[in-house]
Image 1 (cartoon, rainbow, N blue to C red):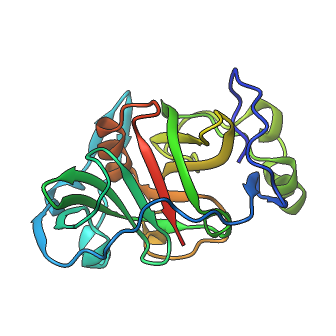
Image 2 (cartoon, one colour):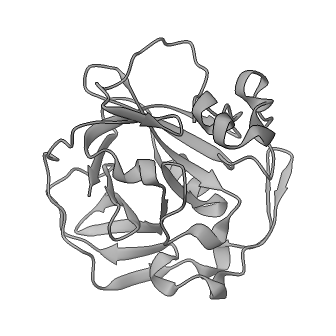
Length: 224
C-alpha cells in the first residue's frame, strides 16, 4: 500500500516490491525476545461497539477469535525498554513492552509482505482513519480498485487500513514501507493474509495507537 505523505524517502534498498511494500534482505534484529507464557490480564470486554471520530465500529464476536489472539497482558522477559514494539510474525503476535517483565500482546494478521522484512525500525508517524492508496501493482491484479490509486479510498469501515496506521522508518529516516494498521477483517487475525503488512483488529490498533509516541524512542523489532 502506498501512502501519500510530505516525505520523499526512498525506503530501504529493495530487492522486490509487491503490493506496495518493499522487501529487503533480512536484517538480524538487534534484540531477541522470549515467547510469553502466563496471561496476567485479559480484555475480552473491550471488543464491543466502539464510537470513534464519527465512525461506529461494529462489535467483534471475540469468542470466535482464538484466545491467544485476543488482547492480553502477558508475562514477557525482554532486554528491550518499555515502549518497544516487538513483532513476531511466526507467532502472529505483536508485543508492546510494558516493563517489569510484562507486555501487552495483540494478535496480528501477516500478509506476504509482512514476511518480507525483518530488522529494527521506529514509528515515525501515525494517523487516525487513514486514506488508502493501493499501489499500481495491486491495481493491475485487481482492476476494481484502480480508481483508488490516485484519489485514494476515503477513511471508513471498509478501508483496508482500518481505524489507525503507524508508519515505520529505518535508522536513516527512510520509509521502510512497512505498516502497522487496523483491519475490518477481524477473522484474518492469526492468519497469513494474501496481502498487507501487519494488521490488528480495529479495537486493538486503537489501543496500541494510544500507547505509541512517534519518534526514535519508539523502537520496533520485527522477528521472522
